[in-house]
Image (tube, rainbow, N blue to C red; front, top):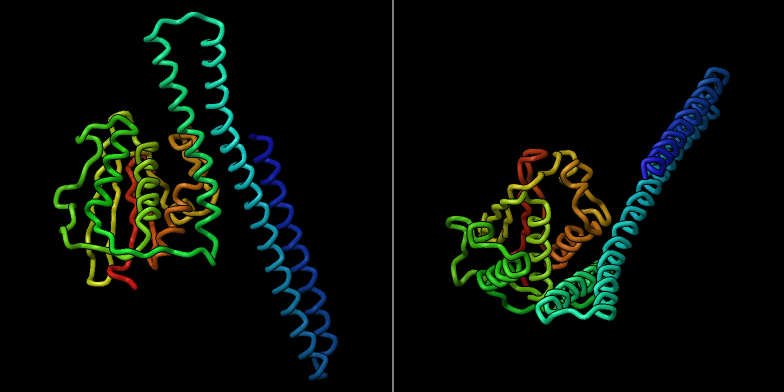
Length: 304
């Protein structure tokens, strides 16, 4: 992996250097043209226009090439992550099945093995569903079912699921003080999609939190037209320069604490895609590495 990263950096540096060299060459040629034809208006104007086109083309081409290199890097990272997320539980399930086949185990050990295999199966299903959901939410022609949704019960169901899934106590994951919304607070949208988005944010907070997590959820109305669901954790945090990038497809934070966390890099991408499908948005706030993160899902109230 380090050799591959070095190779990509070398490629990016090559394209940037090539673009600069072409731009310098175009500048020299155009300047020479202007000097030779400074007394003739038409050739002079044509030379300046041609020079501007060359410079613009070089800049756009360099930007495109660098973006493609970075996109390929993100896709490779995604493939590696998904491969690991698929291979690890499959290997575990196979190992436990072989053990059950070859050895005579007591009932308690069998139940323990069955539970581990069920957990691994759920992990597999979650990975596959995440990939499929990422493909589905970006389809522009996908239909969106809109119903009236009570925000409080929606968030409470997501909190209860996260507690059950990760065996958390109320002290570790709960509503923030004065963060529970009023009973009449509602939004229009697809409940399953919004539940998925909120669950992804909570799972993300859990993954990047320390051994003693403190995750708080709040639903607030900053104005008459919008609702915000905020999930705050005390985890590894996000460098300020990467707060917008974390919502890109396949992107993963490269801080030391975040590198230890497994994932596909699709969770927050799905969150923002779902929020935007509902006419809202999603954004992240953090004071930096090691200082926790707040992910906010912003939605329009009573949108039609």
